[in-house]
Image 1 (cartoon, rainbow, N blue to C red):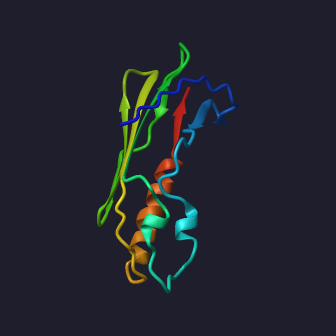
Image 2: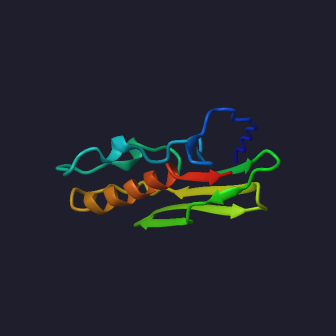
Amino acid sequence: EFVFRLNFTADNSPQKIGKLKLYKLPRLQYIYTKDLINTEKRFYPINYRNYESNDFYETDYVLELKPGHKFIEIPENVDLKYKGHHFQMQYIPQGDSKLKIVLKAKVDFATITPEEYPAFKNFVKKALEATDALVGYK
């Protein structure tokens, strides 16, 4: 097992809607990518082992706002399954100004057939949308 810890302060300009500020999580790992689902239809199988070498990912984010700020908009938890693939993002408020986000993904190395591709593509698309979610704070 390997544990990697990273602490940083993001002083980048958040997106704004009125007084609401929006923050997008940095992507520290790429479990699924758009390249994997970039075609409408597949004519040959996807040998998933060619795309992936890890079978499990877990990333914990802890967002802490400066004093006087609080989280206003938090995305809903996500729990997706496709065959042996399982993707989860869980948002756990820890007070008004602290938010823990747990991302877990179990990857299945089984081959994806052309017939299975549309359902797999839908699964990956939803997982990518989840990783692009924004949190709102004031």
